Length: 172
Image 1 (cartoon, rainbow, N blue to C red):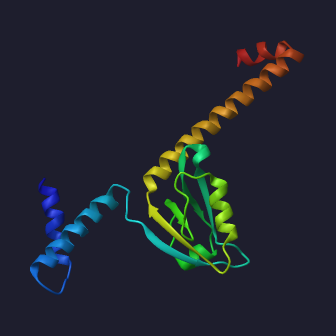
Image 2: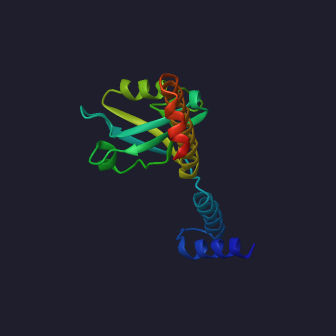
Image 3: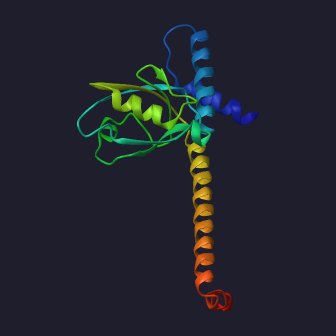
């Protein structure tokens, strides 16, 4: 528990709060909790407002109910609106679009809400990169598994046409 005290002490020394010592203690406690949450890959929700332009919003999303995962910002397009604005990060979980919650929703619903926005879009997001990394690793495993199955089917189909192919492949 010494490290918790050390972080609290550091926060207490760095935070400037006008008012009584009780306000500084509360602010320090909140900042300490936020620092630990951020170090674990979690953060508080934040609002990001982006202008809607003809070029789009400048980011991609992945995930959704059908994939048994939250919806995430998977890519910030270089030079796009989101990158120029600077408010979104790869790894942000999308919580709502223009006041409509997308937590536990299908991917397509989030995409429809983003496309339906007129002049600007107000997003509520939370930075959780570790969860995105886990989700991407799971998708990669599924992709590799599907590729292996496809390769096995191709080998079986070829071997039906030419049985020598199996013998030749097994020698190498």
